[in-house]
Image 1: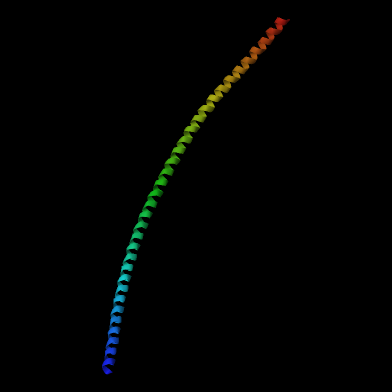
Image 2: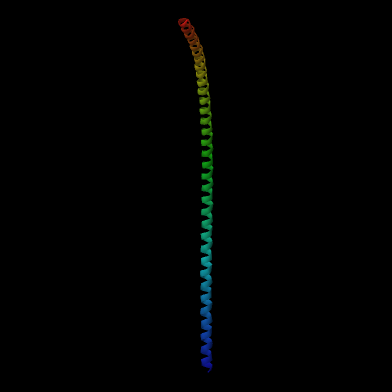
Length: 125
């Protein structure tokens, strides 16, 4: 029986040793996976930083371009307003000239009508 007990003890020791080896292998695999995950997170963090820098640079360029376009548009609108004001002033001057001519024509028409009435009353008399 002692052989049987020794065999059982040797079997248990062998099983325990196999379990220890398996646990070490699992621990090593978990450690490798952890290191791989850590490297992946570090790579991802670097990628995110690079993307953030690029987005920031693009945002700055876009802001500069929008500002430049806004300034240019403001300048063009100001120039257009100035030209429109000049044209409106010229148009107002022309309208004033036309108003003066119409006043002269109205006065002359009133004279002609008055003369016609005078002549028509003389002819009727």
